[in-house]
Length: 134
Image (cartoon, rainbow, N blue to C red; front, side, top):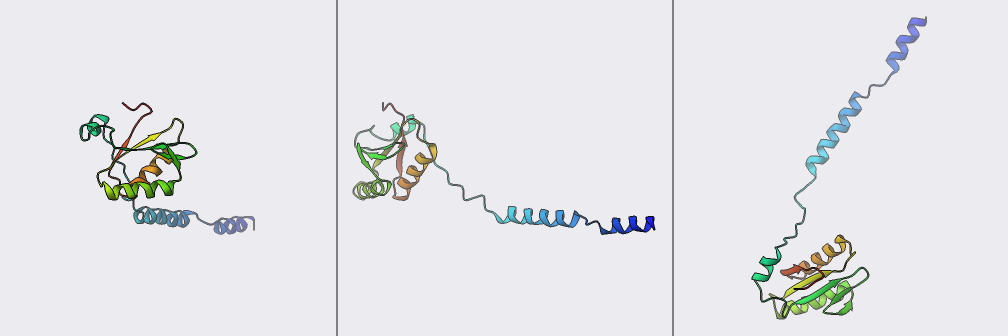
Protein backbone atom coordinates (compact mmCIF):
# COMPACT_ATOMS: atom_id res chain seq x y z
CA UNK A 1 0.00 0.00 0.00
CA UNK A 2 2.79 2.36 0.80
CA UNK A 3 4.17 1.94 -2.74
CA UNK A 4 0.77 2.63 -4.31
CA UNK A 5 0.47 5.94 -2.43
CA UNK A 6 3.84 7.08 -3.80
CA UNK A 7 2.79 6.35 -7.37
CA UNK A 8 -0.43 8.31 -6.92
CA UNK A 9 1.47 11.28 -5.52
CA UNK A 10 3.85 11.32 -8.48
CA UNK A 11 0.98 11.25 -10.92
CA UNK A 12 -0.77 14.08 -9.11
CA UNK A 13 2.12 16.49 -9.73
CA UNK A 14 1.42 19.13 -12.35
CA UNK A 15 4.10 19.66 -14.96
CA UNK A 16 5.15 23.28 -15.57
CA UNK A 17 6.58 22.58 -19.02
CA UNK A 18 3.34 23.36 -20.96
CA UNK A 19 2.92 26.58 -18.96
CA UNK A 20 6.46 27.66 -19.76
CA UNK A 21 5.87 26.88 -23.43
CA UNK A 22 2.72 29.03 -23.51
CA UNK A 23 4.47 31.94 -21.77
CA UNK A 24 7.36 31.70 -24.23
CA UNK A 25 4.98 31.73 -27.22
CA UNK A 26 3.18 34.77 -25.79
CA UNK A 27 6.50 36.52 -25.24
CA UNK A 28 7.55 35.87 -28.84
CA UNK A 29 4.16 37.03 -30.11
CA UNK A 30 4.26 40.34 -28.26
CA UNK A 31 7.87 40.96 -29.25
CA UNK A 32 7.01 40.47 -32.92
CA UNK A 33 3.74 42.39 -32.71
CA UNK A 34 5.37 45.43 -31.11
CA UNK A 35 6.80 48.11 -33.33
CA UNK A 36 10.14 49.54 -32.39
CA UNK A 37 10.27 51.86 -35.40
CA UNK A 38 8.13 54.60 -33.82
CA UNK A 39 11.02 56.10 -31.86
CA UNK A 40 11.20 59.80 -32.51
CA UNK A 41 14.60 61.31 -33.05
CA UNK A 42 15.73 64.86 -32.58
CA UNK A 43 18.35 66.05 -35.03
CA UNK A 44 20.93 68.26 -33.38
CA UNK A 45 23.69 70.00 -35.27
CA UNK A 46 26.97 71.11 -33.83
CA UNK A 47 27.14 74.83 -32.93
CA UNK A 48 29.51 75.56 -35.80
CA UNK A 49 27.07 74.11 -38.34
CA UNK A 50 24.12 75.93 -36.81
CA UNK A 51 25.88 79.30 -36.85
CA UNK A 52 27.28 78.84 -40.36
CA UNK A 53 23.85 78.54 -41.94
CA UNK A 54 22.41 81.69 -40.41
CA UNK A 55 23.31 85.25 -39.63
CA UNK A 56 23.84 84.69 -35.90
CA UNK A 57 21.30 85.47 -33.22
CA UNK A 58 19.74 88.51 -34.87
CA UNK A 59 15.98 88.18 -35.38
CA UNK A 60 15.74 84.82 -33.60
CA UNK A 61 13.06 83.95 -31.07
CA UNK A 62 14.49 83.02 -27.68
CA UNK A 63 12.51 80.42 -25.72
CA UNK A 64 13.73 80.00 -22.14
CA UNK A 65 12.70 76.75 -20.49
CA UNK A 66 12.58 77.22 -16.72
CA UNK A 67 11.60 74.80 -13.97
CA UNK A 68 8.18 76.40 -13.43
CA UNK A 69 7.44 78.38 -16.60
CA UNK A 70 8.40 79.25 -20.16
CA UNK A 71 9.55 82.59 -21.51
CA UNK A 72 9.43 83.84 -25.07
CA UNK A 73 11.76 86.79 -25.57
CA UNK A 74 11.59 87.58 -21.85
CA UNK A 75 7.79 87.30 -21.49
CA UNK A 76 6.45 84.55 -19.19
CA UNK A 77 3.71 82.41 -20.75
CA UNK A 78 2.10 78.98 -20.80
CA UNK A 79 3.03 76.23 -23.26
CA UNK A 80 -0.18 76.76 -25.25
CA UNK A 81 0.45 80.50 -25.59
CA UNK A 82 4.04 79.81 -26.65
CA UNK A 83 2.87 77.43 -29.37
CA UNK A 84 0.31 79.98 -30.61
CA UNK A 85 2.81 82.86 -30.71
CA UNK A 86 5.46 80.81 -32.48
CA UNK A 87 2.90 79.52 -35.00
CA UNK A 88 1.80 83.10 -35.78
CA UNK A 89 5.41 84.20 -36.21
CA UNK A 90 6.11 81.24 -38.49
CA UNK A 91 3.21 82.23 -40.73
CA UNK A 92 4.89 85.59 -41.32
CA UNK A 93 8.45 84.20 -41.53
CA UNK A 94 8.53 80.45 -42.36
CA UNK A 95 12.30 80.18 -41.85
CA UNK A 96 12.19 81.86 -38.44
CA UNK A 97 15.03 80.77 -36.19
CA UNK A 98 14.02 79.63 -32.70
CA UNK A 99 16.58 79.31 -29.91
CA UNK A 100 15.71 77.08 -26.96
CA UNK A 101 17.67 77.84 -23.78
CA UNK A 102 17.09 75.52 -20.81
CA UNK A 103 17.82 76.91 -17.35
CA UNK A 104 20.16 74.97 -15.06
CA UNK A 105 18.40 72.10 -13.31
CA UNK A 106 15.54 71.78 -15.81
CA UNK A 107 14.79 68.11 -16.57
CA UNK A 108 15.72 67.02 -20.08
CA UNK A 109 12.23 65.61 -20.62
CA UNK A 110 10.75 69.10 -20.18
CA UNK A 111 13.15 70.51 -22.80
CA UNK A 112 12.31 67.68 -25.22
CA UNK A 113 8.61 68.41 -24.67
CA UNK A 114 9.18 72.04 -25.69
CA UNK A 115 11.19 70.94 -28.74
CA UNK A 116 8.34 68.58 -29.73
CA UNK A 117 5.79 71.36 -29.32
CA UNK A 118 7.86 73.70 -31.49
CA UNK A 119 8.23 71.02 -34.16
CA UNK A 120 4.47 70.40 -34.05
CA UNK A 121 3.73 74.03 -34.93
CA UNK A 122 6.19 73.91 -37.83
CA UNK A 123 9.42 75.33 -36.42
CA UNK A 124 12.18 73.78 -38.50
CA UNK A 125 15.10 76.04 -37.64
CA UNK A 126 15.44 75.23 -33.93
CA UNK A 127 18.69 75.41 -31.99
CA UNK A 128 19.46 74.39 -28.44
CA UNK A 129 21.73 76.92 -26.73
CA UNK A 130 23.71 76.99 -23.49
CA UNK A 131 23.54 79.57 -20.72
CA UNK A 132 26.09 81.81 -22.36
CA UNK A 133 24.97 83.14 -25.74
CA UNK A 134 28.03 83.81 -27.86
